[in-house]
Length: 284
Image 1: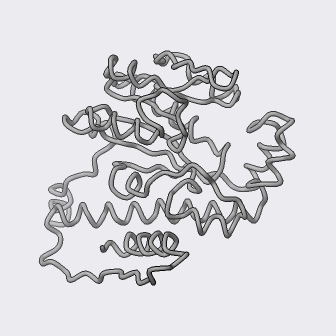
Image 2: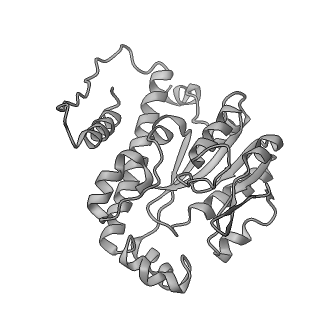
Image 3: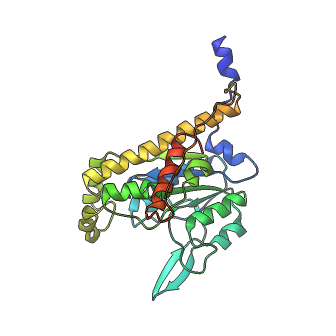
């Protein structure tokens, strides 16, 4: 009897199953805790696997940072020509949204979700480009680091003493993402990769060790990333259970109230804290 019940239960959809569905595009995020853990590499590996299964995959934009192993994985994948922009005497290569929308692939790879676009594009931020693709029915795979989650910036700034300026709205992880993959690596191994010149050019290694690439900071960032993915998995499991009729009746939910004075200087921090707490409690 238990076996029959298991067979009747719907199986979780794979990203390939989601891609094949019509309507809004589906989003897969490869989340890491620091540069060099292998987010882009993992995304490109999956792109090749999906291409072998017949998915129409194109590379919208991928920044290899000169890493030979990552560059090798671009071979065999169709790439949309980059948008070339002259800015302050420097030529910038950026995502060409016009070309992506004309091509209308089944799946597009858009690296570095928090990135600020070069002037003259469709949108100011790359995450806005991703939202546009999803609205057009194009499936997207993308990458980002945990320190760029908007509501985490205060906690991470206190932990690392470094405040990031490019952030991604929480909705990307809480509601928009259909799948989140934690791309993890032991901290010691990541530091070894940095020292061997596998993450940044030699002239940038010393500077990297002064910022994020300290054992204590990386350990804290890794914990943030693991917790974020675990929370996301739990929320999706609860949502799936509710969709399948697992909850016999509506359970009353607690709400989170944020109180502040009209002159509160910490208002934005309080609101972000309240939003995160509400998300963790799956409430409003």
